[in-house]
Image (cartoon, rainbow, N blue to C red; front, side, top):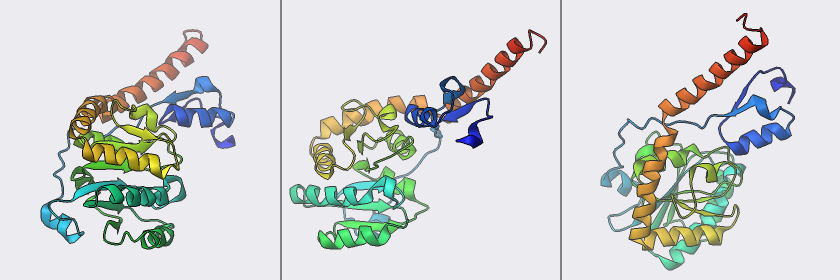
Length: 247
């Protein structure tokens, strides 16, 4: 768009976002991909048994958590439908949808329609979202569009296996059958199948999570800062070259 027209450099969080920016008319050589970084040094304790019980989750339950605003591009209804399919195969599954947004009523209606009231809780916005995510057996993200899906970086750092869609920049951080399981956007059955695989195959879940934990080192805040500084250094070098070495 016009507001970026005069920018010397535009930073995008993923190649997917860079492509959208280029299609909007920004010169590709001015777009630099600098993925979001997370603080890998922070320690997060999984939510306590008491906290989980207050949300209706008991000791033997298998927990699936999606941390995402209830907005169209996160497609929470596909997550709800997937959870109905998972429950049909794994009755003691429980789901948490952590986040708030304009689709709350739509999502709640779908939960009621599928008789998931006791299986799936809409927690609204939570300050302890990280702790809830860290307590999950599986982390999901059902987005139809996504710049990057940085909540998945948190799941990777916490060692929680991931079932997500291939939307936007997600495949740039999660490799299918390498660091998580990916499915087509909008496909509740495929998402459900991947959740069931992770809940029922401990070895697969553990190996994906272990590789994800190594992969997430690429997305530290330190790496993000390094890459950002490199963009500015490049601009300075180009300016100096244009000035004929006068810089």
